[in-house]
Amino acid sequence: MNPILRNTLAVIVAIVAGGAANMGIIMLSGSIIPPPEGVDPSNMESIKANVHLFEAKHYIMPFLAHALGSFVGAFVAALIAASNKMKFAIGLGIWTMVGGIMAATMIPAPTWFIVADLGLAYLPTAWLAGKLASKI
Image (cartoon, rainbow, N blue to C red):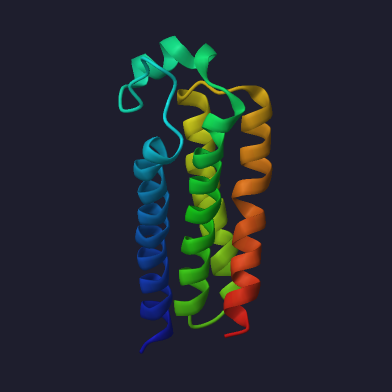
């Protein structure tokens, strides 16, 4: 396959795979760690009005969704890419981190979570995925 076509396909498939992993975890999160009483996690206004009810445990699943979404996307990108596998993995990590920055501006969360999420969930997992995929 043409390397440019393969690299383009790597990016597209990786974005879809990483997004699916992220959303899958987010969709399951309420059944694993239920939201605080009276909070509708599908309603942004409900989250904003009740953010004071959230405990540290309520941030575990969003962190995992962000970290694993970035990891899956980066891993897929590195697996499919014709060349520069680590660059594609890190590129996907940057892509997901931009989404994380956007979410941090829209969804209220404590500063400790935003710092941990942006610092640990995206680029470190993308780097790890790139390292692992490069060995395959």
